[in-house]
Length: 336
Image (tube, rainbow, N blue to C red; front, side, top):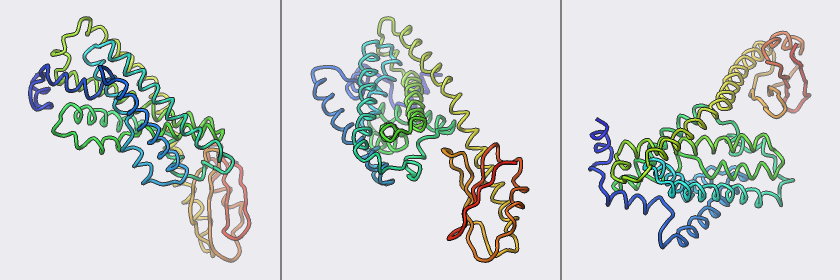
């Protein structure tokens, strides 16, 4: 059954020529090793620079551009291929190249941000903040994208989909984001961004290795001790994914709580302002200050602030509500 599924996915039965083609595509080895490494790190440094300035400038277009030219998926797919066929040399070289790329991307983000770090306020930049709280949904998306990447690379007739895969799986931006946040002394946020990258990295490794196995590459490669190396590689990836589900589950829970909190506070604030000359403009949470910010706009006399205090009592999960009146006073409430 698996053979027929593998042939269906690949299009044709996998042969030695196809194994060689994929090795040449995803592995760093052979006589052109030096050229391949130079090309890889040049593209990585350039993409990291684009990602860094795109993040700092809150530019979605620049971040997407960095994703397209980022070459980091290549050694990760090489690692997945090495694990699937049980090639220890391929596993070692792909792992070293990918680790070198990780360090380089974080370093570029850090170095480019450091001279202007005193002028940067990450909490006000959406492109930075959205990459600091990965959830279980990010893991699920990464698992599917890992399948897409392995599928696109194993079939030369769909290789034109690789830019789309590169955009779908966020690799260099979270690493550049980590460097930016380290340079601005936001260590907790930096760890969140690094967690997003690790999530994507492990998901690509696991699903990529699985798909290459289903397609039949290990059977054709016929490497000695391949089964042992393959089992160890997949086991390590599975354990790591299970471990990261704990912080991902926590951030998913926090996101769920924050969304429900914003809905509740929005409804309570509207009830509080009913009949007055004010309306709720927005409700948001600040994870750094552990506050819920309610922005209201209007004219006239505000209803007694104590009424809002009574409405939100016991619903804040220990947070503080800050009411900001546009062009007027700022009130602060503590959870009763």
